[in-house]
Structure formats: C-alpha cells, structure tokens
Amino acid sequence: MKIAIIGGGPAGLTAAIYALRNNFEVVLFEKGGIGGQAAITNEVENYPAFKNISGFELTNKMYEQAESLGLKTKYEEIVSVKPEDGMFLVKTEDDAYIFDGVILAMGASAKALGIENEFVGRGVSYCATCDGNFFKEKTVAVVGGGNTAVDDALYLSNIAKKVYLIHRREGFRAAHMAVERVKRQPNVEFVTNAVPVRLEGGDVLEKVIVKTCDGEREIKTDALFVAVGQKPNSDCVKGLVDIDENGYILTNGNLETCVKGLYAAGDVRQKTLRQIVTATGDGAVAATNLIMQLLNK
Ligand SMILES: Cc1cc2nc3c(=O)[nH]c(=O)nc-3n(C[C@H](O)[C@H](O)[C@H](O)COP(=O)(O)OP(=O)(O)OC[C@H]3O[C@@H](n4cnc5c(N)ncnc54)[C@H](O)[C@@H]3O)c2cc1C
Image (cartoon, rainbow, N blue to C red; front, side, top):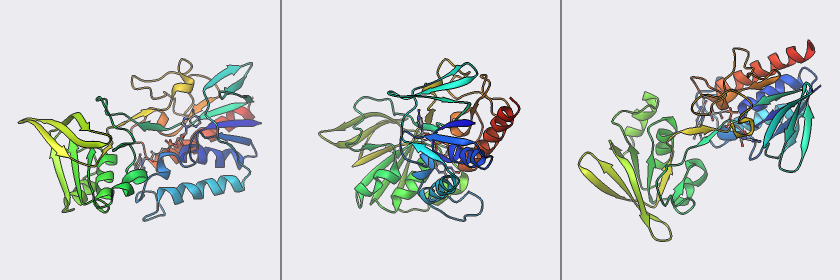
C-alpha cells in the first residue's frame, strides 16, 4: 500500500520512517528543502540525546534514516488533496498521484509584518540564520517577542555590531533562559512597548520607525529580521478538512482529520507546543494510526 507524506520537516520524516519500517511504500513531497523550519535552526538544544546540534544536521540524519529504508522523495509542491473512491488524489500543478492514505505535514511559515514597503530582500528578512551573515559588523534589528525573535537576536549578536530587539510588550513569550541570555549580550538593546509603523530607505532599508508610549522613535538599521509569528501551510486542504480560526488543522487524538484516512502531524495542526520533539512524536502517531487503519481495511 502506498502513503503520501506532504512536507519533509521533522514530522513528515518521522512519519516516513514509521511507515517504511512497516513495509509501506512512501512518497514524500517537499516543495522546498528537506528539514523544513528545523533545518534553518542554528542550534537545537532541546531535542533529547543531543546537547547541542544544528537543525540542519539533525534533520539530515532523519532524512538519511528514511532514505536508507527506501523513501522516495519528490521535490514538488502539492496544491490539492481530494478523497476519491476510498483513495486520495494528490495533485501538483502538473501531475496527479493516487495514494491509499495521506499524512499532512506541511508545517508553518513566518508571518509578514503587515506594514507598507517591507523591503523584503533589501534589508528585511524572515530568516536570521539564512541572511544574518550578510550583516557582519553592521547594525540590525529583530522584531518579535517569542522564541524565534529571541533566538534570532542571540544569533545575530555574534555577527552584527549592534542588535535592536523590538517588541510590542514589556514581557517576552520566549523561554526565560533564552531572554536572560540575550540580556547578557552587551551589543543587544531591548526596545520594548514599541511597534514598527514605517520602514524607510532608498534602494535598501535604512530606518525602522517605531511607535512608543512617548511618540515615534527612529531606529537606523541595515536590516530588520521579522519574527512575529507563523501561519500554517494548510492551503492545499482548504475546504476539505476542519481548521481553527488561524488555519491550523483540527485532528482527533489519533491525529486523524475529519476525513477518514487523512492525518495531520506537526506544526500544521492545532496543538499547544510546536517543537521538533512534538513534530517527530506527531509523525510517529499519525503514521502508526494510518497504518493500522489501512491494514484493517
Ligand atoms: C528560527 C526557528 C528556530 C526554532 N528553534 C527550535 C528549537 O531550538 N527547538 C525545537 O524543538 N524547535 C524549534 N523550532 C520549531 C521547529 O523547527 C518546528 O516545530 C518543526 O520544524 C516543525 O516540524 P514540521 O515537520 O511540523 O514542519 P516544518 O519544519 O515547517 O516542515 C514542513 C515542510 O513542509 C513543506 N511544505 C509545506 N507546504 C507544502 C506543500 N504544499 N507541498 C510540499 N511541501 C510542503 C515545507 O517546505 C517544509 O519543508 C524553531 C523554528 C524556527 C522557525
């Protein structure tokens, strides 16, 4: 029997390992790079068995394991999934494939700042680990208050001359230890209770204007790293499965969606903790339950 896994992040890769070890044929569809968000994580310090490992190395190990078991990978974006005669029709722009079961593991992507003239690629970036090196010894700013923003500020403090961490509140949602670590960096300045309202510059970004309690403040910077949250990549199943108000896919305890045989795992589904360890756990649970369902068909 044949299973499709959509998304090659930790959830999809773990689901693949479980299905392959049960002798299922598995095709994994990935629209970008293997490893998903985890692959662009500079340092992972909370995945058991590794005190410190780069996200790229960790997910590469997962991929090598799945490949050694016979994983087939197609570097294509899935645009729709439809149930058809007890099977699933999985479509890309140009092709269509039939599978017995599908695991949705499309993860999530960074949200845009939502103000005019975002200077994307001209000073504004959504990935500090990807673009940070372009700003060696320069001034950069990070906007956001969660784990990603704080991790980005720490990462950039080792590259840039000066880092502004802009957050709309006083307190941070990020892990306490991470915030404390950033506070110890002498080149990081916290700009709290501040909301970016305008970006200014010529060909490239030059200034971020933030609104504070005392009025507007101008922050001169060479780059702005945006880390203000995420949106789930659930478009290919829009209208097919139930989602919450933010677009996260709803599942039952077995990680099955409201469509029989269609499972969801990892950051794309509604859950309380979006991490590598919970994504891999989800992948294992979704694959095991899908396998049981197909074997009992
Ligand atoms: C900067 C940053 C730092 C982080 N640090 C940590 C950390 O230290 N520890 C930790 O545990 N977690 C960390 N996380 C969170 C962790 O990376 C995620 O929870 C985890 O990667 C989720 O795995 P996933 O497989 O569900 O989704 P993702 O990793 O998002 O992977 C989903 C994959 O699906 C692909 N995809 C999406 N739509 C389609 C489609 N239609 N067709 C084909 N492919 C598609 C995407 O390209 C992507 O590769 C961090 C995240 C970020 C952004």
